Length: 480
Image (cartoon, rainbow, N blue to C red; front, top):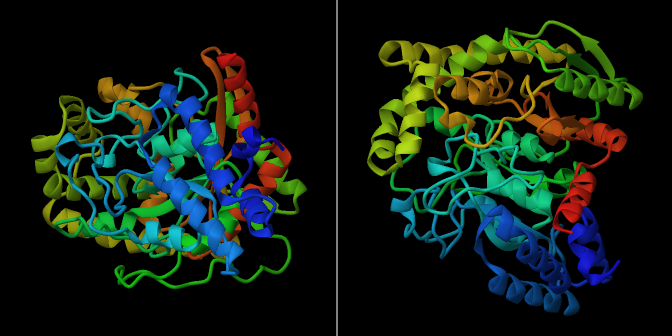
């Protein structure tokens, strides 16, 4: 492999070669920075280039290894961090112009954990204003584009992360997810992710001036977007390392016990009144066959009511957002994001007062139903979205736009309300009139069993192949 091709390596391949001494951390970081310089001007995925600091750290890691110091599991692996999470000395702008000078006094737990594992941060990635859109654009840093083409949104709110990692800028991309913000970009760009369950990854921003609402605390999680499902097994154990600044973090091991016999997978194409696109149907069938061939027992069954749980959860979240966040959006948000929030409140009428408290309490009922269901079916294979991914700015097109972007995504935010892990993996490349587009499916798992969802993603990826290969061929043809 030539120096110019090192950026193509997965995080697993990079760490193995660097730890073995076959590759230096400096070479790995240099290759990623060169790839960033080549493709990021067109994508605008990374909005803060940390190349100089990254090279200094890579050289320090190489010296430490040469001196006999132990290597962490991510030694020398280039990563990106989303701009809504604290990294000491850098602005946690959250895509908001008024916050462009909010400099973090310390690292958030996820940043510290990644660096403690040996990762090298090469840049910070874009997010929409307040990290509360399924698309990525803001007045401070501008629009992020999808590497597949401008016919597809890059997703949000971790749109910069998804576009960057799939374009080859870093092997791992940090993101977070309160209603789908890891899985939307994974689906848009053909990446792989697992939204961790409640309490799995420690979280806190030292720069914050007040604690988040209780639903934001319980629905929002930190995670990683990758090109390879196996990279989640490499990297997530480091991300979940304990941090005392998150008093509700649960220090569970990444791997659980291997279930006896064939693992049952509940399979559903139910879309709760939304049309199921033929390409999404085909993607589900390809994922189902891949799991069957890998030895899973896949059964088409009726699930606990995802629609009711998802809509109730998001209306409750909107109640909290209306009470605690609307003032900030009105004061510091652009007209675009203010208009989108107004439609959010129409699509998801906020619960308030006693009814909000009752719906927050009802969360336990939904979670109990799913817990009992998963005693028989530990994994659940479903659509992520019923239609192929939407175009950029679709959520700015009034009620119909928000309904297509977020209203139909009940499989996404239901998992946040339930606190369950949910992975997203591509299982088909669709050739649509607008252009080629990856189609992802979702795999939910029981509490504390993200590893089972990732294993299922690996089974699908082994049959379908990683989506980065056809993407890079397309990018090469386009640029050439």
